[in-house]
Amino acid sequence: MAIQIPNRQLFIDGEWREPALKKRIPIINPATEETIGDIPAATAEDVEIAVEAARKALARNKGRDWFSASGALRAKYLRAIASKIKERKPELAKLEAIDSGKPLDETTSDIDEVAGCFEYYAGLAEGLDAKQKAPISLPTENFKTHVLQEPIGVVGLITAWNYPLLMAAWKVAPALAAGCAAILKPSELASITCLELAEVCIKVGLPPGVLNILTGLGQEAGAPLASHPHVDKVAFTGSTITGSKIMAAAAQLVKPVSLELGGKSPIVVFEDVDIEKAVEWTCFGIFLTNGQICSATSRLIVHERIAAEFMDRLLKWCKNIKVSDPMDEGCRLGPVVSRGQYEKILKFISTAKSEGAKVAFGGGHPEHLKKGFFIEPTIITDVTASMQIWREEVFGPVLCVKTFGSEEEALELANDTYYGLGAAVMSKDSERCERFSKALQAGIVWINCSQPSFIQAPWGGIKRSGFGRELGEWGLDLYLSVKQVTQYVSDQPWGWFKSPSKP
Ligand code: NDP
Image (cartoon, rainbow, N blue to C red; front, side):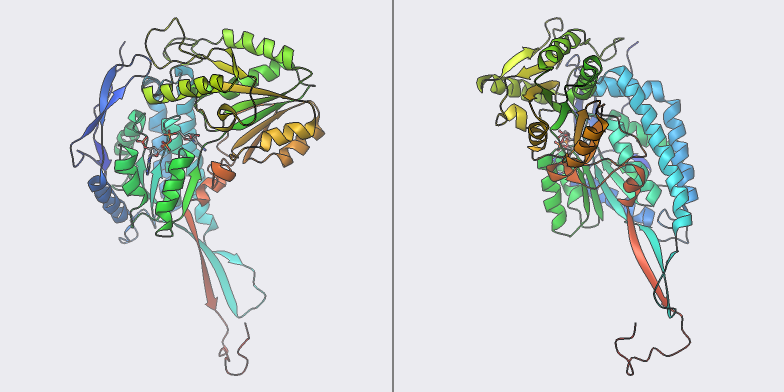
């Protein structure tokens, strides 16, 4: 049965609102290239209204505002959101699959994680109440000091399209748990489920203005949001280029930012592995989400002693990957998100060939699919460390391969990148794995696996992959401001004239 695409407006101040310029952007199903609906396109005028609504939601109003609400009250709303998301899971998973091209199995588990994320931060919101007024031990009895952890204020949340609702949840849930009011700007390439989050907020009666959702283009809606003087912080997930623009805009106002950016993560496979298991993780690490993962382990660095057998098995696995409409049972690789992305990936492959690399598998559009932005699982060999395909983020189902002889060589290859998001090492030697986990330059290291992420564990990169850690308690800290409160408690006068340096 065809799935109905809801017709939505912008979500501002607790209500649906037509965009100021009445513009809409078509939604293209990447598997069929058909237009299946449209989304509203916000511009600077809408950003202005949403920022005003968010500020109002935080305004101190007899203790009933979001800023000073107890963590327990915020937790109640977050749990209600989680529960509504669970109720709508099958529908949301289908909407996300049709919008983004991700296999339905994957979007179904993503929606579970979305609900889990709201529940997790509900728990941390409750914990915040107990953390308030934490006393600090001082070397004097004349003063008492405690710490308040307060919401940063109004936050702009700008996200990418590869995990549309999950990336939004990673930001919205901790921001609301902390007591911030948020304006979410998802990617215009996959916004349907984020607008359904608005519908969920209406259903649970979230106070107006606490969460506002503005779909639209990066230039027209994202840029005015990032540079708005009354947005106190920007949290961004996207490319390194856009991340640096956001940082530049924020720098004008000395506004804090957190940036989850791109990657070119290595997977280093030593000669002592169980090859079949390592091949499976290698495939998972690059082909999950149709290859569009920031942390995709897109550079395989395999020991020369097992390289031939590894490649043999890898190509067999690639042959068995079902490339199909994301709604089909057993689909493991759907289309990439848009024509632009599709063409960009094919260009990467043709440049690799022109630079002398070889396509060992795939490399183009699968023959059995006439339409859609599908790209075969692709393996590129004969790569040198200076080639574009080895250095730049493709953000598609393309793995490039190099071999190594010594541990030093493997480490040098792995770290020779300006990115630093994820890195995987595979070996039965636990001491070697530990050595590697310390030496790899990345925010996340996987040992004998690739890609798992957990709501409880920190996520984020170093170098040009950004800074700040989402998820876990680190994710909540991104939206909290720490205030020191110090009180003079002695009965005696301070005595400045007698001893000016007395603490
Ligand atoms: P982009 O940087 O193109 O866009 C990300 C978001 O920023 C979108 O909502 C986009 O809107 C918006 N945007 C674009 N230009 C501006 C601007 N000047 N000011 C404010 N906002 C703007 O990234 P993609 O959407 O193409 O996502 C892919 C990238 O995201 C990859 O590099 C990937 O590695 C990274 N990523 C990182 C993750 C991490 O956790 N580190 C996770 C997921 C993805 P619009 O789409 O409408 O242009």
